[in-house]
Image 1 (cartoon, helix red, strand yellow):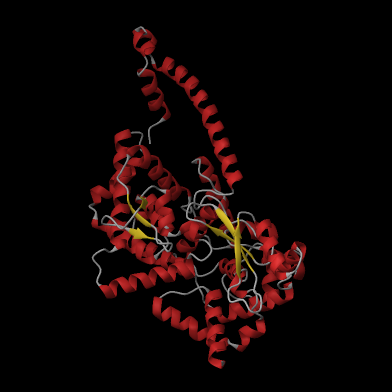
Image 2 (cartoon, rainbow, N blue to C red; image 1 turned 90 degrees about the vertical axis):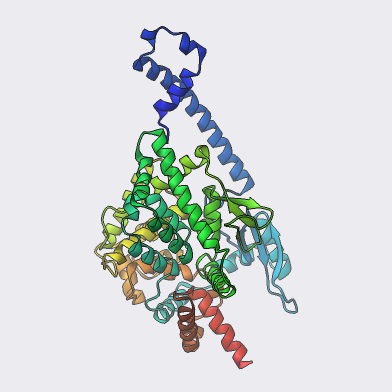
Length: 494
């Protein structure tokens, strides 16, 4: 990445007034003085442009994929959905007797979608808002949570299982090429991560060491390092596309993509699935049809192709990815909940020092994943609870999962005490998994499922869970597994 001094010197040397200055004026101090004036002017303009872009994004209620968190919906039957361009829309759904599909329509704001639901259900907007908050009482949700943790004892999300495998096979990549390692993590899918590993280890050690040039102050070295990173991702995408696959291999590949789309990227595909991530870092772009050696198609049927390396575009992006890898690298592998929270805070400090955003799902997911992975690779199976947290500390440490149920239970059952909550719920699993189970409760597939139903169909749920693990080699989403088990049980009775 060119330094500020280099950019200023380049601008000044292009002016005729500079060339006409006597030699004694062309000294370092004079250059820095004129450079400071230029940078001050540039900063004012840049801040104004950023403010204008932010205001426009807020006005349009949309943003680039992965840059804006999912809007909260406070009405029953209103669901947020992000389009390919990043804009958010809101689907209205209401199940009415005699109508096959519950879908009513789509609106640009949650209030307009709520009006559709209210009209169809013959209720007021306030009534469906109240229904959203009263889906389950704290006692009912706590009972459901206890049964759920028992049924899915030992459950680990598939993306974490895959990330642990990546870390075990990555060797020195996290330290030598943190940007490439983070890129492999953010693509999420197991096949993508293995493609990145294969490409990385196929390179010569000399080529691998060139990535370190991003941290130098040499423009040529930074350009070469960014080119190496871009090449690794491009070759990995080519391998991932697998144009030379046989028919059985293609079917297996498509089944795996469907699994990750359904069970892992569920509700958050705009944050971290492979194609949106590659689009954000200008590695692929839309194309009208299948063309090229690494053509990828998303579930909407849109084709994407590789981009050529452009130093002006890719050097800043690869440098940002490299800094993201450095900032999220933990200093100490946490063993206790206090150390876990401290690592979250240290990561935010490093992000601020590197001028990186540390808000939103994207950042918190990455920090949490890397902490989990380092713990598992160090042989640490669970965090020890040494500090008793309040609801605010729980919300801070459990990101990016939603913690509304945890806060509700802590207020309802305890005096805002984490240790008291663990005793009340009789929770025996790892503390770092607590928020994952609580987040699963918020899935739409479980909104109408009671603890009694979970107990009644215990055997069917365990059978579907085992079948999913056997087929894909990884755990599926508990909410979907419960839904499939209940549907199969009902159809079997019918």
